[in-house]
Image (cartoon, rainbow, N blue to C red; front, side):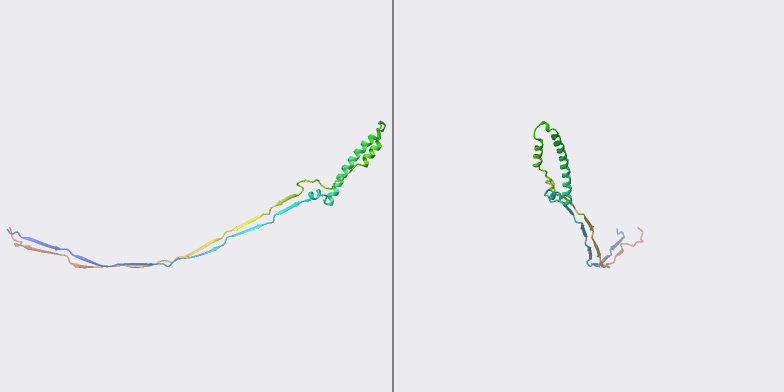
Length: 190
């Protein structure tokens, strides 16, 4: 039996693409770094130290003191000697009052007074620390003025060029559907 048939043929379309690559270029000039610097400053001021040496006691101990000091010393020693002499005169007076006890009191007193030394010391007392040394250090003033660095960079923007690629589509084969009937006629009754 011959059954009618419908025959369908189908073809797909085929598309081709033609492309060109895109290009990108970036250019940038180097940045410039402008720097300037202010130097720091350190200022120092110093007052002189003061050294005082007082050697009056040493000169006095050598017997070469100032005139005022020598006269004061003589006056003090003279007062002390006069007080000792007054005490001695009182003792000698007591001895003379007792001449009846025997002995040669007047000759003994005369002999003592003839050979008696009455020194007046005009030199000062010798000592290991007769020189006074005083030192007052000077003052140091320090003033620091800081410096600084100024940075002024020049940055250049990049130059960007972009050329896009292209895509050109084209048709290699067009799609189709082909139908055909084979066998009997289609409107026949079976």
